[in-house]
Length: 183
Image (tube, rainbow, N blue to C red):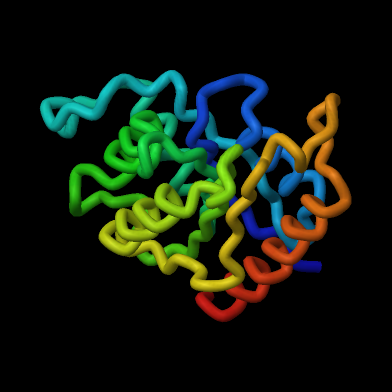
């Protein structure tokens, strides 16, 4: 029997009860047995500093090792001022530096954005996709998932509504297929 594929889930929001974290947890809960999805935390990472490329802090080293162990990535991001949160950009910089040691290179990824707005984080999603292309991540083109009016997609206990589960299941089906196509 094949081992499940390890997938790093990176949540762009640092807020404990964020809708993005709820969406990421719902993905993990809904994931098929073929995927071993887990959240890799980014909140404890100091700001990227090129001076640390030679002698990286322990938090950088641990984060890079976790990313290196993954065979794919799912990014779940809110939208901050039509872009991705600073913490997410910082994590991407840390994982991709020094340039010759980019842990993301050549691996498959996918993006989900979530926002209370009607656009569902469209700007953040597309900005993140631009960054992922530069990091040599094979970013899944479809299905695109923009969780608009995200406050209506989870109940008071943080559980996804049926509609949200349907969106996320469609995403997971697409991502599982994407992994097979890119491996």
